[in-house]
Figure 1: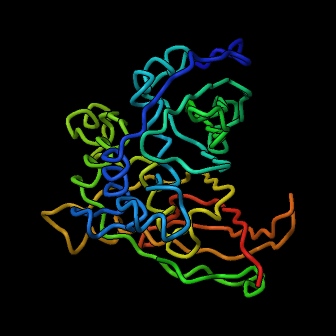
Figure 2: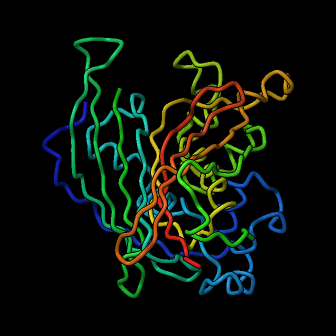
Length: 157
Length: 153
């Protein structure tokens, strides 16, 4: 069961270096494609991205989901720190605020904090509760610019 | 990639262009696991899910959100996106290759959307579009919205 004393807890800052190949791999995955030539060229071709008004190749809108998973040791340390049982874990909500581009070579730094923990009674099982944990993360690039803010809601059934 | 869209041309009630994914396969889930780093065995190991009485692995919610993002950016350029949020509501099982014709419908994600708001904030002209992702059987996977800042004529 989620430990409600964890509200306000900050997680160790993580750093993730954005590689061109990782952006292409992620774009292929969400596009269900096998070949880079089938992708939106802004994800793989610098010149095409510039022609479309970007500084360089850009990352897809949900790319930042891979930062903590690859840079902060995966999901388990976070779940354990919160006292959540992995088997009962559901991803409830995910929200992104976009302030700038993510380009190859960028060094992204993420700082996450538990901002809310609450419970809701189950509709189908009165007297039984689900625990909600909301984590906000500010992601900045190597210049210190805030690029994305994320808000994730984890649910423990 | 996308057609040039102006704030002036968008009306409340306008529908986002229809989008349908390819039928999701276990190979798609493995590729997404590798790309994202989400190696929860729930999404790729059928012997793991069998421990909990489940017949099949299920897709990562974030994979469905990623597919939904593709639906959005086929219509609105990435650079105009300001906010994108979803609430996950249903699980997605991949198609079985042993019975593809009968199982592809539950694994095909369609994304629809409707412009619900036009407003100005921070010197930008914004639209809010509510979105729904569901399978071809009508089972809802996620609901949410995005906000985009569009250029004016």
